[in-house]
Image (tube, rainbow, N blue to C red; front, side, top):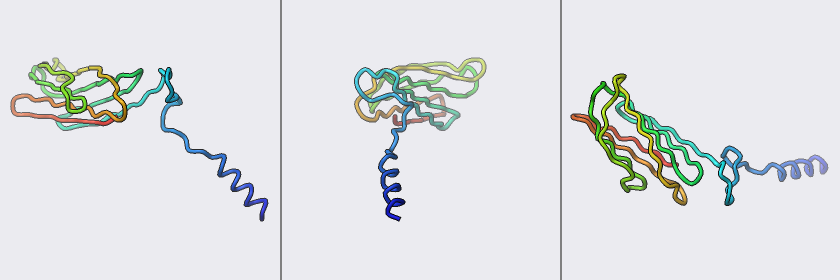
Length: 126
């Protein structure tokens, strides 16, 4: 019984928690560390964030009728990172890619797209 208890304690001590990343370290110079988040919002919108090499890639996609003019604002921690006016393509999609710096700690990215009579919002934290 003592041997079984000792084996349990030793086996339990060897099982350390594992970080939830793809194997990259967190020290300086570790350029292969990646984190990814994807959320869906109203109006058929999708926001995908990917942190890599000290910056965050923002992929925003919106499905609508073709030819609709959208005013899009991208916020990074409540500060305007990008703004512009875009039209949906013939297939009815609008795709936008932007990059922002990856600040210390978690970063919140929010996208607001407005068209006549419609407002779509989506946000995620990475």
